[in-house]
Length: 358
Image (cartoon, rainbow, N blue to C red):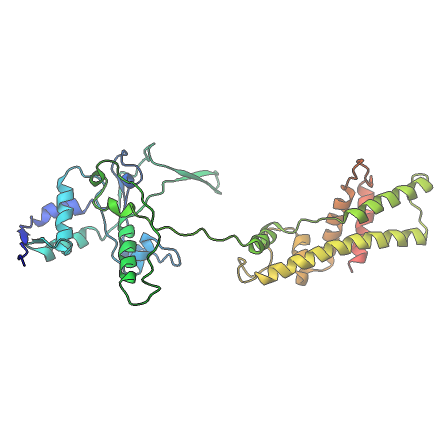
């Protein structure tokens, strides 16, 4: 068996490494667009926050993982050479060793411990941006430029490889990966770790939960009041007949008032039954809803009482009765026929609803 030849490379002076290592980054502009100018961001492990359950560069640093840094541009070419020396010092090359690996690695750690923003004063047109609305005194949009971390991609690949090397059959299962061409014809110009982006992991999209989606809609937007078409149509037609018999005025006879109360009560009970079913849905997803209440604080009072029975009181009944009366008054039959109520008539209808919801 032929003996391996190991080449020892003479380490450079510390000041030379310092100058190059101080410019290394976790996120590079060129990882998004290789034709853009150099620049990016380096995070500080000392100030990193845990982002669990989300996987991120900052979260990995906060949990004590080492996330590799990379150069923002290959020019000057010496920075790529100096980073290569650091990789060799870390033992990533079987054929080469550095003469003073500990000194190189210590310099690398010292120079990349602090955060850095390189050429971030203005975003180049080649970089993609996402505009998110912000609610401030001046209102407007905040521009975000998504950047990716080759060091995090490397950490994920190494973690997956170590999982597959274990004895657990589930851990040995190979995860799905895609094939993506990144960096153009000369990927080394983008970064030493650019190839880590060429085999990204693939995951299935999360499945939508219609019930949870409905519960969140109820929490934030409240319940849409749907009227029983047959009952409301009968009420409109019944009231039209009563007005015709009374020469444009509703009769004050007890029998007529009782009939109207019965019809309106049927409509109100139909709506309250809707609310009961919606409340049951919210209760099933209570642990998922934000905050401790079933409904968002910004909803009107009548919505709170509809969806949370514990919040029903005389004030709620009055507001709910007014909202339902307005909804009934706005209802139109196919021939555009309606109750034709003025504000006084709507108030009278609200009084009836308030009584039947006691």
